[in-house]
Amino acid sequence: MEEGTSKEPTHCAGTADGCDDYDVFQWDVREDCDVRRILDRIADKWSLLVIALLDRQSLRFTELRRAIDGVSQRMLTVTLRQLERDGMVERTVHPVVPPRVDYALTPLGRTLHATIQSLVTWTETHQREIAAARAAYDARAAAM
Image 1 (cartoon, rainbow, N blue to C red):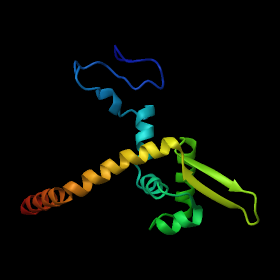
Image 2: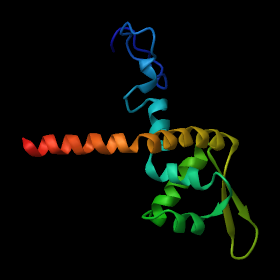
Image 3: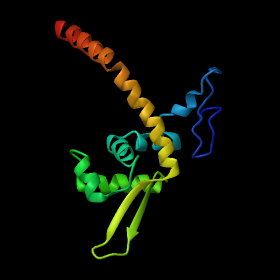
Image 4: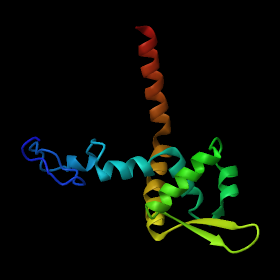
């Protein structure tokens, strides 16, 4: 183990690199890092879409599946379970026949939605710049 590395399994900090003005350890790339695992979960495309759809109302599984183009039943089930486990989504089973299950954002999930909305706004603002950069890159790559 490198000097300065924490022996705590859930602590993400690695060795110090002299960078005092930015906490590089919040972006730790090791697999066992809790921050990395949380970012991997909430940043995947299905989780982002589920969180966005649940922002204004609770939805049933079938409503979510219809609204998310390309998601399989299994992938949506896995995504909802993971978001529920992380405290982002609440699952409510209604005692009716056939059973009715609703999904809604928790207060924690709503705070995440606000952050995601900022990212979407940034993307919308800069999409033309990104498209121009991609076109320039592709033109350079094709010329090689």
